[in-house]
Every structure is written in structure tokens, then in C-alpha cells.
Length: 262
Image (cartoon, rainbow, N blue to C red; front, side, top):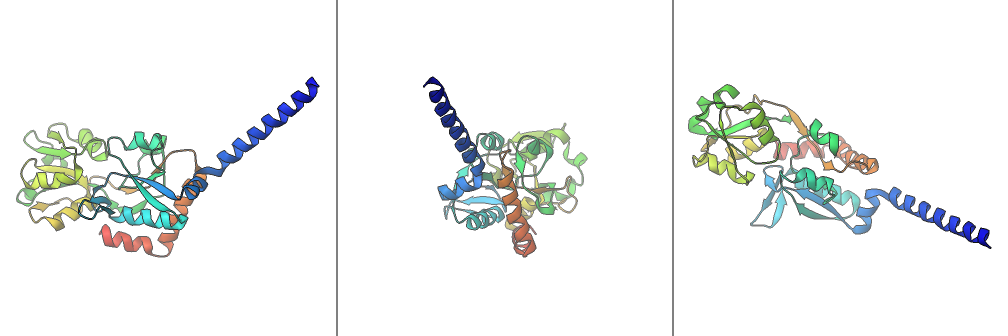
């Protein structure tokens, strides 16, 4: 009788293990489809990538359109989860969302601890500056910016802050929490230079005649953007890369890049 009890206990344990493995193997894709929503982390402060329009209550930009394409491909709705550049990494590691899209630079530091999709905007992105048009002739290189009298404004937590601290040792660095408001701060004379991306600089010089991006055609760095997620789910990463490959092949990605990034 004792042997029989041990036998049934072993069967129950084995069944539980098999069931747990099957649940684990179901993966993120099945969970998202079952849930009916895909949770997308975004800062909503980065034109023309992901920007929250307070008037319409909607997210705008190329990443908003990419998010919708991904959601449509899965047959689910989008649930946006606000994050910040300062908390983006920890929020990703904590699983607060399924993926993050907000003009996130692909780099080694992120890839070491998280997973990033194939790049988009390849050859378009790079670090540059935004300044007042009246000061444009002053800034022809990093050396011109890296002076004690130059006030450089950056948003905290992202690659703009890292670039500034790594390359500017003499300029006065000012951290300003609201990235989307920095161009207006520059125009108003609250700071002299904003470290930003070429696509963001292009957006703001088109919108405000007081601003200029004198080095936009000679960026200090070059990189692409990617979709960020937790490590460990290769099937989910493969799916996201598959979506990007499909819209690249059918011309959709090129149309979006032309619409928002050029």
C-alpha cells in the first residue's frame, strides 16, 4: 500500500512538472493573445518617436504607429504603460510592460541585461545639438560646446545624459526632467545647448524658427533604435523581429521613416 501511495505521488509530481513546463513554454506571445492587450512602455516625451499629445490624449510618432502595427498583427489592443528615461531599464527588468518603444538607442549596455530587436532608423540617428539660431555660428564642434560659459541642458537617465557626461568636462551641465520642454528652455535662454538626436533636433527646428541644429549633418555618433524587452523569451523576440522584417520588406517601414524621421 505504501509503495502504491509513493507511485501515485510520483505520478502527480511528474504531471505537475509537465504542466508547469508547458505553461512556461506557452511563452509571452500566448499570454499577450490570451490577455487581449499588449503592454507597451513609453516615455511619451520624444518627438517624433513617441509623444503624448495632451490635447488629444493620444500617443503620436513613429513608435506609436509601430506599436499599432505590432498590436494589429497579434489581434490585440494596446495598453500604454508610462515610464521615464531614468526608470526605463528597471521597469523593463521588472516586467512592467511587454515591450518598450520610445526612440530607444541600441547599445551594448542595454543588450547585456535586456533584449533588443533588430534596428530601425538605421543610418538616421545620431547625437547632435540644438541651440538658438543666433548662436549657431558659435558651435562648430564639441570643443566649442565644452567651455565653462556654455550651459548644456539634458534629460536624466538616457543616452543624452551619458553622452554629455562622457564628452563635456568643462561645460555647465543642467539636468531638466521634462525632455519635451527642453527646446523651449533653449529658445527662452534658460540654457544654450541641448544634447539630443538628429531626428528630434530636426523636428524642433521645423517647429520653432528661434532654434537651430548647426551640426545635424555631422552627428557625433551614429546608431539605430530598437524595441526593448526582458531577456529570456527568444520566441517573442523572434516575433517582434519578424514584424519589423515584414514591414521593411513591404515598404511600410520606409514610408514611416520618411514621414517621421527625414
